[in-house]
Length: 171
Image 1 (spheres, rainbow, N blue to C red):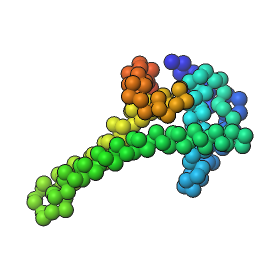
Image 2: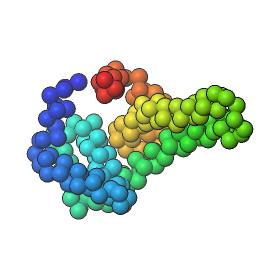
Image 3: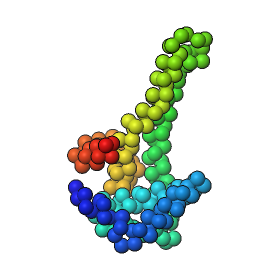
Image 4: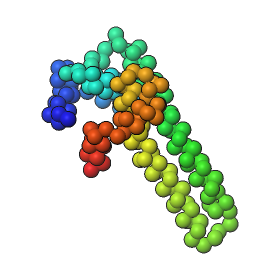
């Protein structure tokens, strides 16, 4: 892994201009529509990095359709993991519902509430590891099918580079 390349990549060519445009779009993402373009651009950056690009890709009106399509693809992959998270939270609420909504039972109510809150927050942390692997698989293969393929996800998750980068990010 070339750490120098990782650090200098955003500043190659017109990189700072692209970072500024992406930052402005990120700030305006409360409008929802620009989010698709920003996520599409992040896809392009990841794809370009994987394929050996030396400069960040251009953010122009010529490639706005491609950014939207790729952004929608990443959003689709994200929905898979959001659905898993929602399912886990719903199951935990179902399990603890009588305790949380029923009559008070000393400290057991609070313990059940804390368990649901822990599931609510812990599940996204756990799912972020395979979710990021899915994004990498999508960018590498340009296929949503491969992005959600368990074989591809496991291949990415078990690579030494992916493990090293995620370990650094956690620290």
